[in-house]
Image (tube, rainbow, N blue to C red; front, top):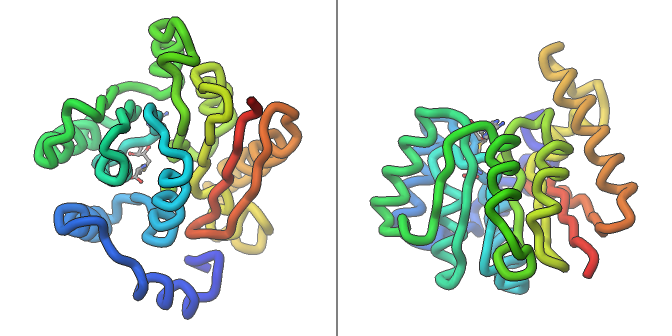
Length: 223
Ligand code: SAH
Ligand code: MG
């Protein structure tokens, strides 16, 4: 199962999709050709909607890849600044190039290194969370470490911040072992289930899990 929902529904949704601009359309195409896992079209449409409601000024992304989602967010939100974290040197360099090409280097800061480490650095740098903290976090890196990313991000968040966690349904493997096709997937699946149980149990956040794209958890931190 490549999609968590019916293939006909997915292709219908894709037929309705409109890229924000030609540059983003080309960047998406390049990522898809190279099998770089950027946000799916239907996930992008949902995120567009939610950021238009929330109007975040400071965004944190965990997992940059070639910078597609960051460039998309910076384009959708001309007032927003973004910090995005990437561990892979090759991805990092491509993202830096892409962000420069789009003329967004002043609003998108890419940090190279394990996100767990960068989150500690950010915690040390941010003195006043209500002034300098994030109002949107997009968790989209190593699928076994979402809990660690969550715990590192929450102290950097303003009140009422939204945390989006992508790919939480892992092509339905999170739902049922019958969709596991390779035993190497097992650790990710087990840890993603633990992550979902964890966020759903939290008193300081309200979370909904949506079956958009590969599944997205939408968490709103309490005021
Ligand atoms: N959010 C991007 C796609 C990210 S793909 C978009 O939608 O355009 C996931 C990325 O997370 C990969 O590039 C991978 O190298 C990175 N990653 C994986 N583990 C990480 C970690 N521990 N710290 C930082 N980045 C990580
Ligand atoms: Mg993703």
